[in-house]
Length: 506
Image (cartoon, rainbow, N blue to C red; front, side):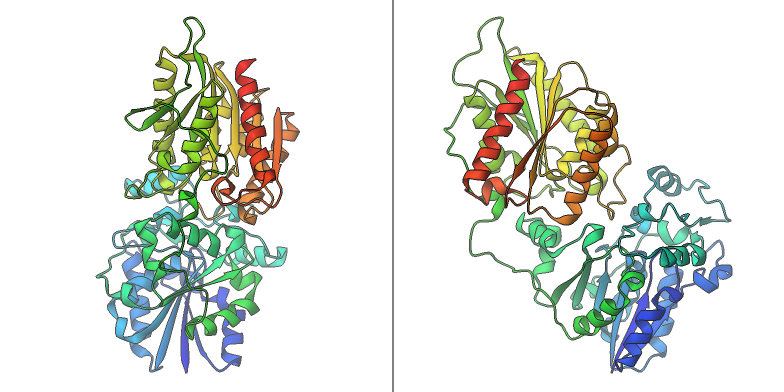
């Protein structure tokens, strides 16, 4: 018989698992919804010393009392931290770890990254008295839950119940680092991804395909994946599906991510247009793709700065500025009389947007200072998650910025991107962009969680009468420039380039 230990996220308790636990028991399994110290109905038990280690010991006591032959630990959101901490100390008792819309924290990580408010994270990290209730963080209000994760699929009654039963979270549970010996990494694991909260199997496979070493463990045959098409609280929005998926996960079912690929990774395939080579100069993290003909005195070239997405691990090779799509774009605009600028910015993690923004600003300054470049005619062109970096420039466009372009962009942080500073929200920043020309290339077969951010941006742009040109790619996918060689895809790239260069030449 399989026994499931169910550990919920921040501000909740064992009550949140009630429907899932009932269904598991009816199917013949054992279910143990856990209320950790200071949580749920035990909220009053929290003291100044209640921290992550307290919750790890809560789970260790439960494990040691159980006699089930097969124990599966399920961690949702914050709950994965104590789950991993306890499993690391009792690996011989655990058959599998299930990450239910939860991350992959490593030794030394803090659950503080789950807190959506950057100012609160910083105060807690600095040891300031940021909690309002004796060392505890107040729960979200009814209107604030969406900042902690997508509320997609939650009926109003369930959201009201979540608010009613939520309790303050002991601050130490978020600030104390997780300590792992490495034993837990040898256990089988399953990720149950909630697509409306920004996770999907396609996204996982994309991260693995980039060669990011952090995700290579996900190709282990003992690791599997399921998707639930709902928001961050599936035990409330899709209890039946959760109760169905967990036994399948315990049995080792689910999608496997291939350890090797039989063909070149998508991002390293050739650019869809046959573009001749152009002179290229490398200055630090910046490459300049130059037109064949020299700039005439008094008539310097305009420039287009291409901004890659991410996060991209620093060990990934080749780096983004050498990926065929960016080289292709750089050469293409150079062939049309503009400097094509590619760069490697340091968006290595979701918390790095501030640093990446500084890298982009530095690159722009370098380009505009080049005597061959017309400092008054520059365009910025963003791709994928790099789209969030457009917020600074949309919020207060400088006079030399003639156009902003974005291709299959992410234009608002995804619901599970809690570490991203609220400053990086193009969907808000566009309201002060004035009449700055904006060219958006949208792919028809975009991932739903990304498409929602584009629609949010376009809705805001329409409300403020922003100057947006929308280019659609029929049957196009994210990263289509190196995966599709259709006439529609080629025409979309050509049209977008012509439009951007047209704004630079006015």
